[in-house]
Amino acid sequence: MKMTRVITCATTVALLLGAALSTQAADGMKKGTPDLQSAGAIAFGPQGILIVGDPKGAAVFAIDTGDSSGNPAKANINVEDLPGNIAKTLKANKVDINDLAVNPLSGNVYLSVTTAGPENSPAIVKVDTKGMISEFALKDVMFSKAVLVDAPEDKVTEGRRGPENKRLQSITDVAFMDGQVLVSGMSTAEAASSIRALSFPFSETDPGTSLEIYHGAHGKYEDGSPLKTFVPFNINGEPTVLAAYTCTPLVKFPIKDLVPGKKAKGTTVAELGNRNQPLDMVVYKKDGKEFLLMANSARGVMKVSTDNIGREEGITEPVKGGGVAGQEYVTVKQWEGVTQLDQLNETHAIIIAEGNLMTVELP
Image (cartoon, one colour):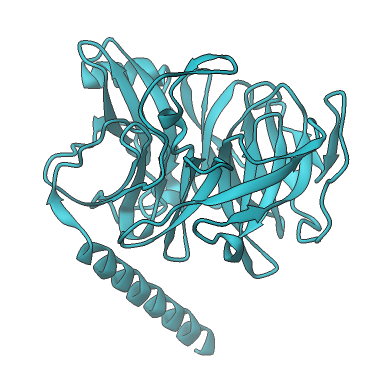
């Protein structure tokens, strides 16, 4: 009887908290059509609210999907030739898949895509737990919008590797944590690599926090390279961002250090090899331990240990020749060609590998 009361109480608290978050979020929303100029990084907030990064428009949208119930534990989603099937659904010549996020309340998968032909335009696509593909219509939805105040200008300039538009790196990843939307990307600050903690529901936006890291492969401190992907993570009870950069330092930043307009110096907890770009990350639990899964452009999917990740000391000496240091990891050899991933439920992940959407057991 005591255990029943505890479970009932916990369930009631969860329901009340969810209802409160939903009402709070709805208070800051309006009905209409979000003016997305692009659809990049996506993540889920409370009560089926989808966070969408629009780097072209230098804005972040919170969109109520109305998708707030289901059974993720029984989801088993597999779709071959995902880009081709999405292109057929959207009646486009082809599509580029930009990001993937699982709705934890329903188990449905959402994708941000860019269509090619007859027009290039952003779209949000849903794949339900039976593998059915549909476009998530953006007309007459409840949404809110935050415009980034210090995003790079939308123009092409000459960069180190040729012409580039830094506006397209204004948002590289998004996540929801403890009532805030975290947004990484490039800003107009002298130390351009930044992350922003936006209050949710959205109000006025502040400048981002500039980020400085020690890059072991380069043997120096840097503050001008974009953070590519990150995950919120509690380390010894402290809300933290675990951030991955190209070539491939893994760095932690306590949320308390993210002060608008200031600079935060991260602690580099791993160097995971050069000539490589991190693509996507997720933290999960297995056998009583927490692990980080990281998909990479050249080094496969890494299962990274979080043991002793809370230590104060970090990597501050060069790691040359493509070497690795810091957190231990193993390569998940059976997962080849993975470009996107997210946790589907307690035991399984959803991945895009070689163009196929697949449900796989967490390693």
